[in-house]
Image (cartoon, rainbow, N blue to C red; front, side, top):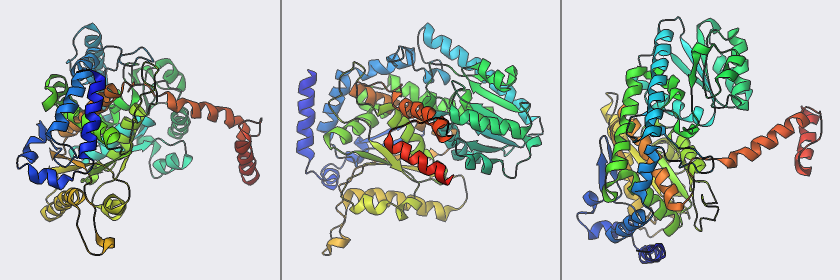
Length: 504
C-alpha cells in the first residue's frame, strides 16, 4: 500500500477513535488484555490501556512494513551508516554481542571485547588497592546511564566501593562530592569522548588537584593523547569510539563505574539482558516485536492523538533516575525538525518526557494526570519480586501501581464535578520479573530500539545532536565577557552580565 494511503488510513483511525473510551474498548473484547500483551524474557508489556484497537494495530503494522522497520533494525546492528549527518554507524549493539553481520560489526565487537578485558583488569587492580571511594566525572550520556544503573542495581554489589557522580559544572556539586572523602583512598574516572567537554575538564582538574596528581586518575575517552596530557597514565585510559553515541554508551567502558559497583559478572549480565532484547528486536516479526510495538504506540499518541508529552512512572525507587535517563535518550535522539533528507518531517516529533517514581509522584503531579486539561500518556513500570523482605510494603506499592493505571483509564463519574475523573488517559504497563542486571539491560535496550524505530518512522536521524552545540559555542564567547575582558552577547545578555558583575 502506498505511503499516502497509509497516512490517510492512519488519520481515519484517529478520527474513528477520537471519541472512543479505553474502558469501552476493554469491555468489548474479553481477549484484549492477552492480545495486547507481549513478553520478552524478563519484561512483560501490556498495551491494553492504549487508545487503540486491533484495526489500528494492523494499520500501524502496515506503516512499519512500509518504512521497512525490520530492514532498518538489521542495518543498525550490521553497521550501516545510520548516522547519516556524520557518516557513521551506531553500533552500541556490538558492545553487547556479536549479533551484527559483516566486517564492520565484527570489528566493532572485537574492539568492545578487548576494551572490556582491559576494564576487567583495572577493576581487579582497584579491588586489590586501598581505594574505598570512586568519583565518576562526566556529563550527558557519560553520566546519566552509569548513574542510573549504579542506583538501580545497588542490591547487586558487594559494597566494596562507594560510587559518587559529578556532572554539573556548578562547583557546589564537586565540593559536596568531595566532602568527607579521603584523597589517599579515592580514585576518579573522567568520562568524555572528546576529552574537551568543559564541565568534565573543569571538575576533573579540581579533583585531580585534590587527589594530589594523576596517580589514581582514570579516563574513558576517544582522545587518549589529551587524557595523557591531563595527567592520566596510558595504562589507565580506556577507549570510546565514534560509532557509539554518548547516550548509547553505558554498555562500553563508560560503564566502568557500573563494573566497580556490581562487578564484571554483573556488568556482563547487564549486557546479556540487552543482547536478548537486541535479538528479539531484529528477529521477531513486526506484530510480535516489543520495541516496534512500543514505538508504534508512541507515534500514534504523538501524531494521531496529538499528545505532546510522555510520562515515565517507575514504581520502584531504585529506578527513580529512569525518567531523566529517558529524557536524554528520547529528546536528544528525536528532538529534530528536519528529516535526514533535509525536508521537514511534516508531523510533530519528540514528545517532552518527564516523570518520577511512584508512590511519591502520586503526591506531586498525579493531580494533573487525573484531572488536568492535558492528556498525558504514561509508561508505568513495576517489579514483581522485590529485593527485600518487606512484603506489606511491596504489596502496597503494586496495588498503587495497578490502581493508578486503572484510574487513569477508567476515570470516575461524580455529581460534584470537582470530584469527577474524566479517565480515558492511555498508558502502557511494563513489568519486570525482578530488577536485576539482566532485566534492566533488557528494559533499557527495549527503549533504545523503540527510539530508533520512531526515528525511522519519522525519517529523522536518531544519532546526531547538533541542537546542543549553539548554546555551548555562545557560552564560550561569553566567558571572557563575564571576566570583564571584552563585550559579547546581545543587548539583553550584556545587561545581565553588567548586573552579575555589579553584584559579584
